[in-house]
Length: 317
Image (cartoon, rainbow, N blue to C red):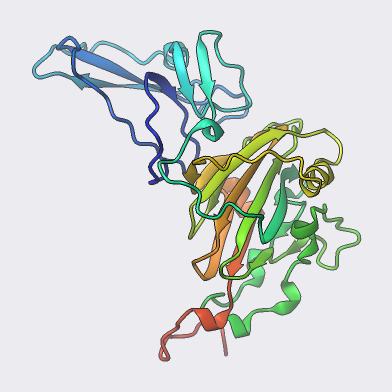
């Protein structure tokens, strides 16, 4: 999944792909009748999905087997295939004859190298407010970035940086109290060699959106998931974590770089920060990115990446 090997899952009948995700599928054709087989595609049936009611078909053709070119896509048949369903959308109720297998139940072929306590923990709550999609009620103000962060860090507008406490302490930004009115450069700082954990928290709002989150520059391990209360979910998760009451799967947890969050729940992901630089982390719904549901993970400092001496500058006088 996402280019990382997982232990094979057999006898799968359905697979859900969210924005940015990739899965490889191996079809075992041995012992099957030589004919044309139908592959069905159906858009997510959630009420807020733009692809709801959309469907398509393709054919897996054995040799010169006859293909029924008159066959038309059927949406109901596409989303109601009995059997195991990998990575189902968490906001919908599956048919009674489908068995869900969430990503957190998958297993990597690789062991988890860094199993000790995390060096840095971030609490990130994804929401959709009156001003747009956000993280901890913060909108990333892209307009304040006028020079490349990696190549011209010295020209960065320090006054535009968000307060680090929101992500580190699990706080919700209050526009009337925050000096940036909760629109700033949301940059998360970690040291090279840190073991980093992130809680991806998604309250079950009036519009339940399973924000698909993508991290550039890294693969992360999915260590666990669980439910959250309607009130103060970040404080609840932080307290549970600090009390040692968050379960972690350290037994070959799956590795990905994109994952859909769970409305009414949390995901716990971990990565080892061995790739210095500035790395984008964002919701993979285009509208949400534009509105500001974006962060940047800064790993290490300027001395740890090389910029050619004659590298052109931009955005400066």
